[in-house]
Structure formats: C-alpha cells, structure tokens
Image (cartoon, rainbow, N blue to C red; front, side):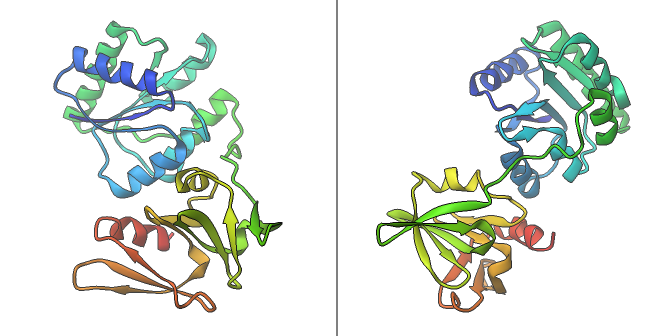
Length: 257
C-alpha cells in the first residue's frame, strides 16, 4: 500500500513516517510534501496513492485546496491540532483524523480503516465544501502570491508586475525578463524561493534554471526523444526553453488548465 504524507513540519513528517513503519511495515511512503504548491505539483506528476496522511494548516494555505483541485478518491487521514469540537467535522464522508501528537493505537485503527476501504473498493471522495463549512473556514481562503517584484537594473530598483514577467532564469544571479524584453536582477538566493511566491497556475518550473509564464508561450515543439521545446512570444522569441521527457506530461496538463 502506497502512502503520501502532506506535512510542512519536517520533524513531524519524519516522526509520522517512523510511526507508520512501526505500525504497518507494509505501507510504502512514496512521497512527502510540505506545502499546497508542492502537493499540487506532486499530484500532477504522480499516480494517486492508496492513502494520504494530510496536515490541515500548511505554510502556504490549507490542504483542502489541494483536494478541491484534484478529485482524490483514496482514503485521507487528516493529522491536526484542532480542538475536539472541530475534529468532529472530519467524520463527514467517513474521513478519519489523528490528533497530534499521533497515538499509535489511533494510527493503527486509521490505517486498518484505509485498508478496508481499499479492499472493498468503496473509495470515499472528499466533499471539500462540507469540510470548509463544518470548520467555518471560508472557501475563498487561498494562498497569497506576489503581485510585484523589485528588479535591479543599473543600480536602480524598478517595481515590475508579476503578470508582466515572461520568464525567470538562473545564471549565477536570478534574472526576470518581461514581456517587453527588459531584464532585471532579482534579489533572491534561489529559484525555489522565487517559485514559492508565484501562482502555479500562471508559472511553471520548466527546469532547475528556468520558470516560465504561461502567457509568454508562443508554441511547443515535440522532439523525437519525447522532450519539448518552448518558443516564446516576441521580443523573447530567441530564448528557447527545454522541457525534459519526465516533465513533459505535467507541463502539458499545466498548459491545458
């Protein structure tokens, strides 16, 4: 049985992984993700697991938003620090929960329930709106993303709208290039940090060194090795972006959203 852990505290994720291994050695942890954004990417690139262990409050939002975008059918066991009254909400649609710190007996019972659901093939779909209503959490609660960056050009700081960025590339420093071709230095240490500030519906991490805006893509060409090459709109048409064979399926899904 394959399991995914969604937890933004690394120590808690490690402890849960160890507890699962002790309680049920037959469970294989196929992934551990720590944010809404990384979880969305994981589901876009991987097959649905047999069970999910999900925290509720993540660094960039609530995990319900993940299940709102991807219609998950496998059992989900929530791990939460909510009080006893709020916990009752997780009995909607038979979804189980574990109160932190995780108790081994409760963990064992939750896993047994997930296995039973799998064997009966009566997978339970999440009614996200019911969960939000029961917890009195606004459905409009979404992660917030940057709307402007300060770019450095010739020792001057220029505010640039995120919507005007065609792509961001790492070349010793991080550079953002606008739809009109202007190039600015971004004062961030890594592309990972920049990526976490961008809306994943609008920006895609094409490679370790490049993030591209969906609105700047002119065309996509497939190669014989199953890789893709992106051509950007003028005036950035001379800059091409390669998409690896492994990332090609998730890129196509992103482009068709």
